[in-house]
Amino acid sequence: MSEDQNSADESSVNETAPEETVPESVPDKTEPEPTTPKNPKNKKLILVVLAVLALLLLVAGTVMMMSGNDETEPEDSSQTETTAELKAAVTLIDGTALYSEDGEAWRDLADDATLEQGMYVRTEADSRVILTLDDGSVIRLNNSSEVFLDSLAAEAVLIGNQSGEVYTRVVESDRTFTVNVDEDAYEALGTAYQTTNKPQIKGVKVYQSEVEFKSKSLKVTEGKQYFAKHSDKKLAAKVTTISLVKLRKDDFAKWNLEQDKADAEFKNKLGYLSKIEETKKTNNEQKEDEPSSDGISLSGSSSDKGVALSWSVSGVSGMEGFKAVYSKDSSLPTFGKHSSHYASGADTRSTVVGITDGKTYYFRICAYKNGACSNYSNAVVVKAPFKAKEKVVSGAVSLSTVGTKVKWTFGGTAPYGFKVVYSKTNTAPKYGQDNAAFVGKGTTQYDMSGLSPGTYHVRVCKYTESGCVDYSNKVDVVVS
Image (cartoon, rainbow, N blue to C red; front, side, top):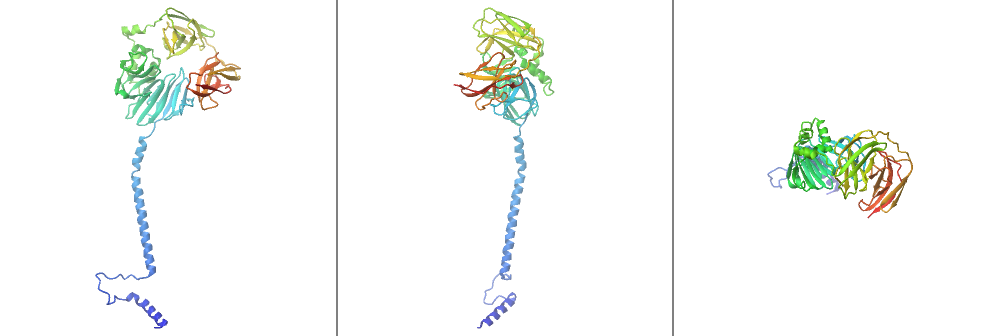
């Protein structure tokens, strides 16, 4: 057959292909053959359509999965709400207070500051601070006290009483509110209570409702106290009644009563603190309330330089010196609770307390030994002279070392004494940011041997009662 005839036959077949029938030689089938033209272009089109359909199915599945994830978002949102944190607003600073974000570097605390979880707050001597949480609960620090805002989670508040005395007034809610003293946890059960963390006293006083001492599952009720540690063995490791006589002498308790009375949330829940204002006393209370001289007789008067005190001693021995303790409010000032002035030497019989603000104070003298006071004198009332505050006159401060002691000379004046500021890490330590020790007017040396071992960077500055000026050169002191 010629090529022309073959081409003609192929052309004829192509033209009649759509009308072809199944040849007789092909066996019968139950289903007819598809009549779709066997055109390669059509096959490609089918593949494209199938690919598009598969892609659409894939997109639809992805959308459904995303939609399913969206449905779980409310649950995630709910979980976020449970981890919300409260804030602590500084609502009062009486005196000087500091804060820290790491417990190492300290800065002056402002009276409008807002604190967050993980921060520290510390009061200096003769200072107090009130922190108010978002829900209205309050944390009040007495002088020379420190707290750690361990957790301000909405469902569980945890405060660390690092040192001193801390009073907490808790607004009742579903959250837990706990104050830790070292390893001991005291959980509020809708209450007002005071925790103490001092070298010789560690425990709790409950003024309203009750508190649970977690480590022993022990509940301490209103008007009771529990001390895990106390210098008085009669009070250690047992629940006892809070002494009304001591309560009425406790300036911090009286201050908290006044704060509670002024707060609409707490004024009708004063609890045991209300007994401070009761005037009727039992015979035992009256006897306990009488001041005892215990061999020290005190007299005092106003002088040009402050309040002059003199005393006589009979039958008291073994002291390292004396402490003059004084207060504007308490008629029986006590060492550790009120301001004090050290009169060194067991043979000392007079001293001048440099108060020149024109205000009236109560004074007592006590025998000082091993960091504590005993044998209190009678109390005397003296009005201090008024003298305008001196200004710090600028002048250079030169610092040197002798072993673990630092000594300095200075120009100008330093009527309010000095601050010895020190740090293991900061080569230019600064008051308000780093650790500091106060040295009174007239003293120009400080012994650092009582610090933990290490190398300290040290500077001295003149104290102004609100800050520091005239920083000295830096020296390094090694404490072993």
